[in-house]
Length: 421
Image (tube, rainbow, N blue to C red):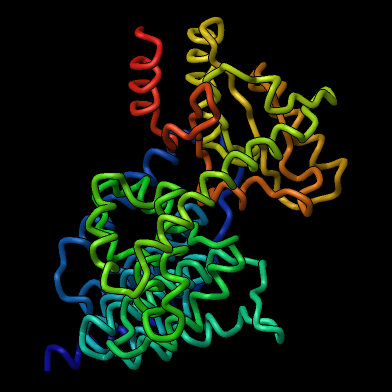
């Protein structure tokens, strides 16, 4: 009876959780600051109570109690409301309560949060033993990205990236054909690699390679196209998706594939040659002042290629420290080449955003724009850049030393090792 009563409260509360949020009247700056502080305190208290409750149905009652109240209607709480709804949807999915989970997903207003709720709920269903339910949620999301020719739409592509990772993680054994169906277009679309393998690695240096998309794809190719496996693995190594200490184990895992090691060595050698060609192609782009540096223009220098964009806040937050490194080492044979990837727009808008960001951040090294002649040479795809910022450090012979994300510690340590201070 207790459960029935709680569920009844939840059901009748659903419409009331959809109340429109009201705007507060005009307040003085002091009143605004005071109200903001009070709102943070209120939502912290609400979230703490919901988090402490173990029963998802009781969490739901607490949620509706607050968001049905007058206080809960303020716009300030909207983002928190959607986040809590997402967690409730996942909680219900973990209990295989499809009706309640779907209802909570349907109440989420923010598109990205709703998509995340679908993905996480699908994974929760799979964990709870209802794999087919999870797959039925994800397949339509992924299928919607396919164009008639089998390629993928670029709009909101991050949703495909996130959803396909969940899909392949819950597919049962023997699903190689489906894995290839969903991963091959992504692999080709990105230029022969999986961008998420890169940014996941930056976030989790100890991530097990078996959990990465390149590994799942390579495993699926064993029967259909074993000759592709060497290229998939070699590219993952090349773009830094697998740390060097973990690579021998990965090679061993695929050593039973006929001709793998020979093909891997050949692909790796070709990759190194291709890397040098990509550096030359990059330096053939005119800089911000129209100068073409060419590979010879930076000969005998340690070069840091910095992939960034005016839209990328972590990139720009990192510029002050990068300026410190440049000032410290530029007279010792160190050069930075910034290559900006700007969001699609009219050419003049792209140029304006790029140049404005360079001026605002007062960064005075070499600046190139990936968007210029991108159809001829796309440096982001050529170098396998899966996240921003990414920095590639080259030695004086143009060979890659290492790749670094937004955290400066590893790059700082390597430069100190090279220059001695």
